[in-house]
Image (cartoon, rainbow over the protein chains, first blue to last red):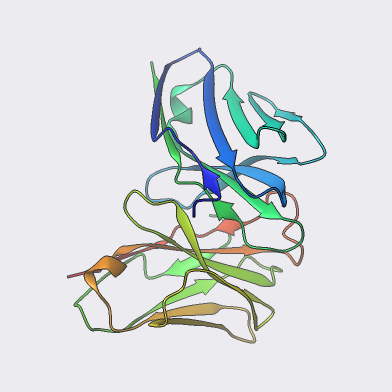
Length: 112
Length: 114
């Protein structure tokens, strides 16, 4: 039972354009959501997060949007750069020090 | 360098064998998590330790076990290995509440069972 779903295995975007990565979840108890970025031969690194009490969080070129009623979140990258090419994982957890539940990831390719 | 150290980076072993993966958490972090990433799969949670005690268990097989030592490093033991155990195994650590960015991951151990 996949509680966090990233339905697009891959996404290709031109440099300078917007990249939109989507994530859906099924567990209504999740109250904290994160995006991680992973380069080959490295571990995932934290990118941005959002609490369930917010619907938007912005950090530079990265913005995460949360739609609780739809159980959907998205990561926007504007403008996209070739260095953004990586696998992006959506993750969620129930409150407290509980294990993160990850999606399968979306491979983003930014083409120059 | 994330501060989380995993050894070895690569491991090739035969079916039926036993291996031990090692993880040193970031300084000050009390929680250690183990995740498995198989082909076309996301990061599957295996087990969590907090300050030496098992805190949560995920989809960890009975052939697998883990522990966290007094110096907070952790080991994941995989026994009676099967071809399907070939995967990337990640260790992550966090502070007591897993605040902010959540976890800090190591660079992983790639296990190949032949």
